[in-house]
Image 1 (spheres, rainbow, N blue to C red):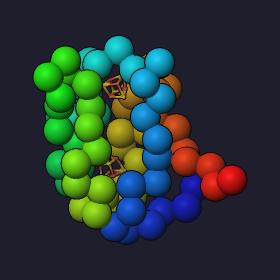
Image 2: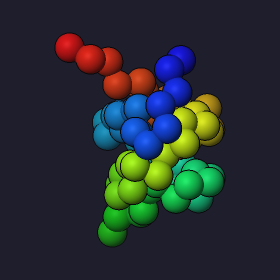
Image 3: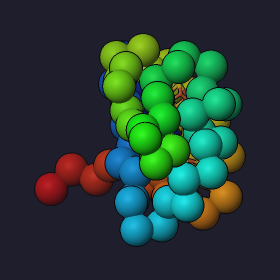
Image 4: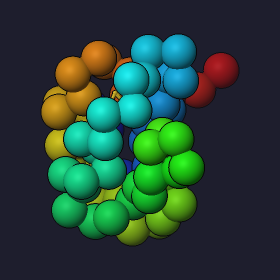
Length: 69
Ligand code: SF4
Ligand code: SF4
């Protein structure tokens, strides 16, 4: 898995996300903020360190690697 500092390398698949907030609370770089419905929003993508914690912690596999077309 490519680790690029300063770029959020994932997409959040909304249809799979149950808005549990785990990614929001576990991201050490505070890349996410919770929206009004507790949905994760990528508000600080440039702070992403590429640690992949959000990817591994999401219980619903809603955080997926962004695949270039
Ligand atoms: S951890 Fe996964 S299911 Fe939970 S809010 Fe984040 S993306 Fe959604
Ligand atoms: S890869 Fe790490 S730093 Fe980047 S958004 Fe996920 S938990 Fe945060």
